[in-house]
Length: 294
Image 1 (cartoon, rainbow, N blue to C red):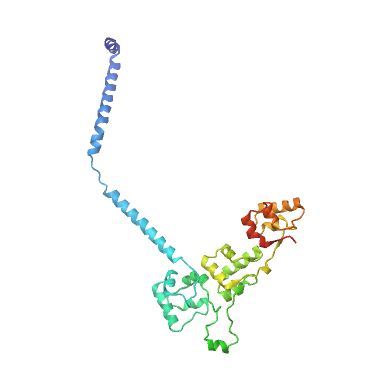
Image 2: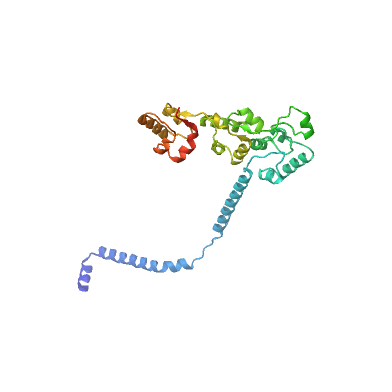
């Protein structure tokens, strides 16, 4: 075989033999480079100082951003408060500067009283943007009237005593003036009451668009519900469009109710919708106060 190789080698032209020698030389160089490269790389030292500096700067910027977000979150933790009774801790949690908090306390200690929401602007350090941020969460138990002593109350027949409000009869002005609820929120309360047909449970206050948990609790504590004022839907003559307007009935349930009515001829009792699986139990329990068969 060796003789054959040598024979084949020498039968190549001079140019072909040169090409073979060059090719073998290149392969030898590549083999040596492959062996020596790890040794060269392992012994080489790198300077990571620039990378470490950039990494440190990046981490600092991230931490700074998180701290800023955390502070913004704390400032935005708003809740219902009465400026005539709120304590220092709660005022600070509302995002007010310590200097402003001290001014409010001093104002009250000297006999000052907040009769209207706008009176908060009398406090040095509270500007218009700060007031607008707090205004929706301010409530005054006196409904905007000044606090009178017991003797003054007995002698003044015009003084209104704050009583729970019938939420199914109240209008925007009553909620705003008597409870101190922000007008925008008052309008949303009335609008949602209209869509429902009236409130049947205080838990429904949590469903009002834009209301906070604190506002919901405050509203529940200062109103009562008269279920006799609830406007009901007669499921024996209402069409799909009328049914689907209710917040608890989507198009699918509206269609199911109408089809069941057509199939049965007439719905005798409301609970037929639950018994015959027309409505799931959760929807039925929320909806039953708003349906009638006559």
